[in-house]
Length: 106
Image 1 (cartoon, rainbow, N blue to C red):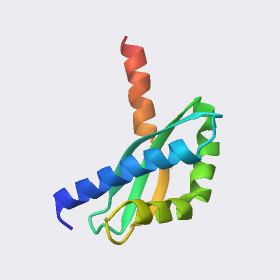
Image 2 (image 1 turned 90 degrees about the horizontal axis):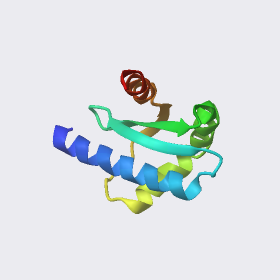
Image 3 (image 1 turned 30 degrees about the horizontal axis):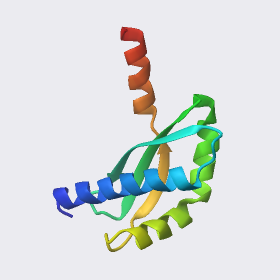
């Protein structure tokens, strides 16, 4: 799959997942989609997120895992990307660590 097309699809997945979480999520925590990555083949996508408070990460992950099939239907209905990749939601530890470094350096 061409690099530019992968980036466009990743951006579409990022925007749609943010919108989906806003519509479907609870108000118990602030769940933020930080990025989406598409595999070189385009058949798999990883969507990364963080939560505030941090202790709600596991709850948010379980929620997103339960909603994955519904989210894939949402992507199919709301976009024109063709075949929807297999989606996996993951906690964005890299973003969490970057935030800690920012706090320590200021």
